[in-house]
Image (tube, rainbow, N blue to C red; front, side, top):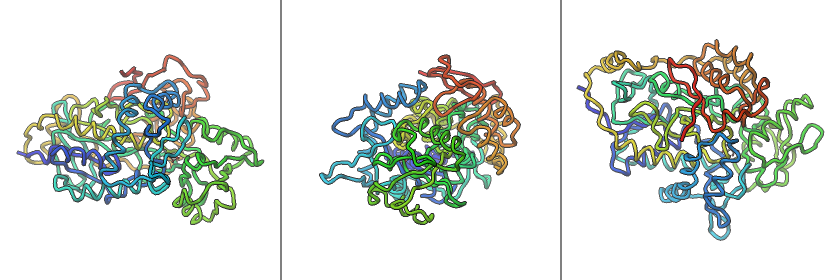
Length: 496
Ligand code: SIN
């Protein structure tokens, strides 16, 4: 018989995965952390923004909540947003205790940045716009040095193991099977499915397909946030994110005629659409981001990256355009990160708590990784031990496939082609419509098809999801989530 490999398996070693693993280990649990790449290779490494937390003297969780609700366009699950704003300050304090050194002002107080949609300065950052890198480095070192955490690097999960209605572990690409009382997906987002993206190439939603194949519900896949200011440049640097925080420090956006056309600190969906429209109006491939009055010392890594790309932001306009940036949808969870499949949890960008609604408030997502990572660890450690199963890995798969509800995912993720990526950009970009989305239903890539199905089910325009054929908000979708579960039609649900 297979003995459980550990109490908890965490899949993914970005901010959410590392923090969940560390939170569980600090509660005394044995954890297996599985990472498809070497530690510090995850998407969160590139996160430039920071953590939104109402810690300034003029701020409060209630104000943070009000901004999150307003920006989320009447689609935020308020209970999840309440958890985030109330627990954000503790998350920042705990990261500091774990050795993350956040930027401070001249008085030694946290230096708080301003980003679009925030009514107050409330973004805690590290190394200017190097927050993700600093956090990931520190948490990776903590995880490697923690004897309760076994780190498996360069190991890919190819299937979850549903057995008698619960997830009892994972199967790895080499056929090895790991079992545990609970499995936490922290596999990141899917924005690299679109051709023009700020995300590294691996962010293609693999965890979503694993969860779906195992029988867990996905939600709100149509809600993909486009970042307004991604560099337009040659391959290799195209899509480089220029953080919104530069606009918080006074950078402005100008069209081909050199005119300002938008309030640069309006919510992200609004600014991205304004950039898109300004480009269409002037038939231009980009608009200009004017950072010439911004102190370059505040954003050393952004300025260095732009110079490397051949642009001197102190002297010239930076050519920018929208790019796919963040998936608000994901594996549907409750407020403790439980999915609809017992024993399976999801945290961070691969999850959908409903907290971001139809338009994520900038920098709420990094905070989410820690707030919900801690909750996931707490809840997951109350799960019962997995049942003993026959010792051959294939027997686990066979056992699970004989149950009525779910069978393991295919062992190999489907190849993502340039054609699928281009189709998604064309037909599920900043503005979509029924005919384009219907075309995507026959795309070879399963996640493209699921995104199209969700986008067709949301027959309205709201936040990041804009449809030419349904240009208005439909109040029937207020605070409703589009869910997809294997072998069932798309559903529209209200979540408490
Ligand atoms: C940014 O820094 O502009 C991105 C941060 C985020 O997406 O929250």
